[in-house]
Length: 267
Picture 1 (cartoon, rainbow, N blue to C red):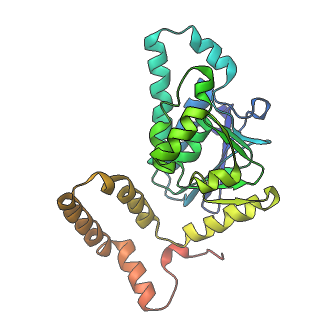
Picture 2 (picture 1 turned 180 degrees about the vertical axis):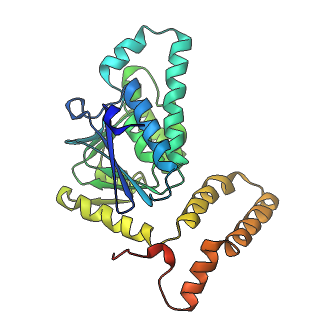
Picture 3 (picture 1 turned 120 degrees about the vertical axis):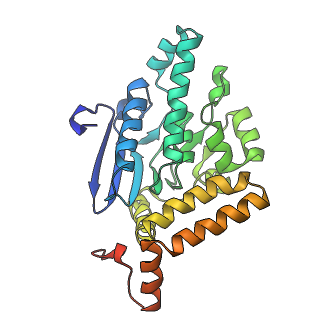
């Protein structure tokens, strides 16, 4: 997808870090159909690149993402069932694409994160939030539910907490989001970039192939029986130990040197 054609998202790649920014600050980076399509396309393009090591998502201005755009929601009200179903499937596919992305993903939560924004946050591997950020799953206040994002939020925070958050629609502080497991770290806003960069540094020192397989393990193993997990995990580690990356990583450890994938990395 051509960067010049993008209207709602921008992204750049520097030193292996793809930074994706929602660019609708006038509506608190709320998403509409175009933003869903553009973001999905950008994430697919980034996933195909071997020169990407980490993906960072954030919002321009004071908000991360305020969920669905009001004008888009007004239009959807007049849609029939089939049109609503199509829009909902596109949103789910975006969340799933982010959740299953082969590169590690970090949500840089600079401000308000509401409704669908909570889905984007939850689909990321790691989330770092400013202490001023606010969070809410407020769909029930509109007579709807956080349907398409629910698999990802529930995986992130667990059923017990989501019963409270989904049913009440309460506004959460950053500290409450941290306690609930929605975010991994909370820092003052002026320390947000440094905190994100700390995670970037840690992720860059790990084997990129190993990280991708780790993400698959986390997704797949919980649904397996012990017999299924026995075969799957044994084959997984056997494949990695005999792979080029695994051989290099183990050799570097034994030879007390940095592995090849950190070459040129001064972090």
